[in-house]
Image (cartoon, rainbow, N blue to C red; front, side, top):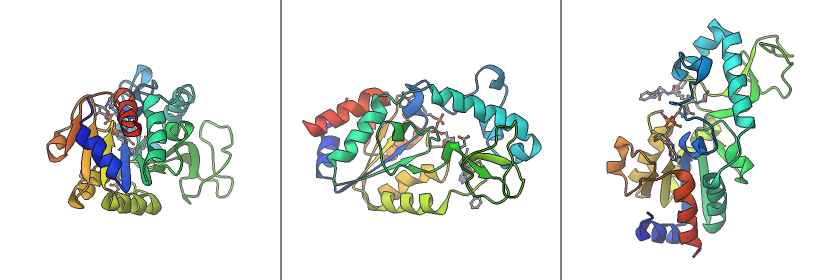
Length: 241
Ligand code: BV8
């Protein structure tokens, strides 16, 4: 499953950068973005729900969707894929973990300094002022204690900019790393999907871990056609051996 040349590249690496997507949390029971719509949410397109327009049109509906996802994630546990990435950070001189996931499972598996490129499901932000609000009043649509505007989950919606720090730190890490791992992502959502290209342009070795190789894989150096919770522990074992 794991190409020895990839293990050798990881062993010689000064800096390893990893981008994860919904696939790394699939084995924790968190449906991927494409599979997310179950039950009463089946008839909704997540890319339509995860927009400021949808929130302004029907904040009650959008809050119901996020509460449903919060309950689902709160009941989930990190899987061996998450734990292997926390371990990998200890085995290389410099490690950067960028995630598109808003579930916080990397942190619960012990990963530090995770760059949450699309925000976090459990934090709240004032939709008008943009500032984080610690404790959201318990209401169908909680409002900002400061200005009275609606609060919303502190995630990045389609059409909204990636927070500057997350964007700049991720682009810098992709440009500086020797090995870039793209794990459990369909590589369709930008600018996250552009990080692997930046790594490639800067002569990093790029590997994809995905049971369904994406169309980008031809431009990569390694394609590990496997599930994250199977491949990542094997990769770390080989490196630690
Ligand atoms: C912006 C938070 C501009 C919310 C999310 C360039 C070209 C085309 C379009 C664009 C472009 N640039 C910008 C756009 C528009 C848009 C975009 O990319 N659209 C796409 C759909 C075409 N991008 C944006 O709108 C971004 N903002 O550009 O702003 C701007 C600039 C300045 C000022 C103002 C504005 C913001 C995008 C962020 C949206 N928010 N999430 C929430 O969660 O509610 S995106 C969300 O969907 C996730 O965070 C993630 O990023 C994405 C889902 O993708 P994946 O994680 O990859 O999951 P997916 O289900 O697709 O695939 C799962 C994969 O896992 C599969 O490949 C599967 O095979 C694999 N898998 C399954 N099981 C396993 C597995 N792998 C391993 N192990 C397993 N067991």
